[in-house]
Image (cartoon, rainbow, N blue to C red; front, side, top):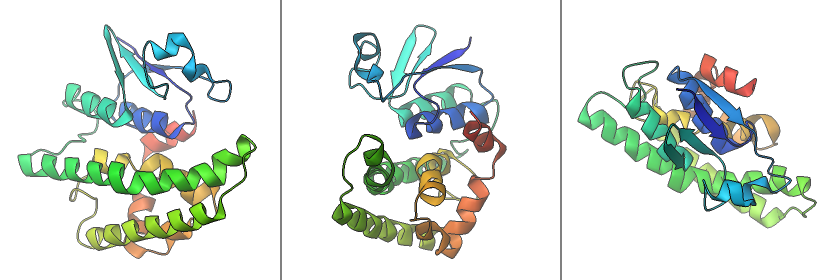
Length: 211
C-alpha cells in the first residue's frame, strides 16, 4: 500500500518524514498542500491534522501527524527493511530517543526561530527582528557546543550508527547551512561539521532535496 504524505515537499517537517520513508524503502506519494495559500487551514486538511500544520500521512485506515511520531512509526513498522534507524539494543534505542528529544526540545526551537526570521518572514512581507536573529543564533550555538562534545566521542548522536536522531536534524540544518549566512554555526565546529557532511551526503537525503 502506498503511503500518502500531505504537505509540500520543501517544508522541513515534510522533508524529515520523506527522508525516513526513502531510507526505509517505503512507497509513497506526495499530496501537495500550499502553505502560502493557507490550504493547511482548510476544513478538509484540518479533518486530518486539527492543528493545521504539515505534514500528515495516510496509511490505509491510519492517519498520523507530527513528523517525529510518523518517523518512529515507520521505522518500527518496517524494521526489517531499508536502513535500521532505531538501534538494536535497549540501550541504543534509549539513546536514539534521548537525542531525538534533544533535537525537538533544544535544537529545533532555536533553529525554527532563526529560519522564520531569515527565510519565512521576507516571503510574507514581515520585517526581520534582528534581536531574535542574534539571540536565536547564540542559543543555537550553545546547543551545538554540546553536540560538538558528543560528536567528538561518537560518529553519530546515538552512537556509531545512523539513526532517527541524526535524520531529524537534516531539514533545518540544510537550510541553515545552504540558505542563510549562519552556516558558520555548523562549519566552525569540527566534529559537528564532519557529522553534517556525513549525514547530508546520504543518497536518501539527496533524493529528498531533488523532490
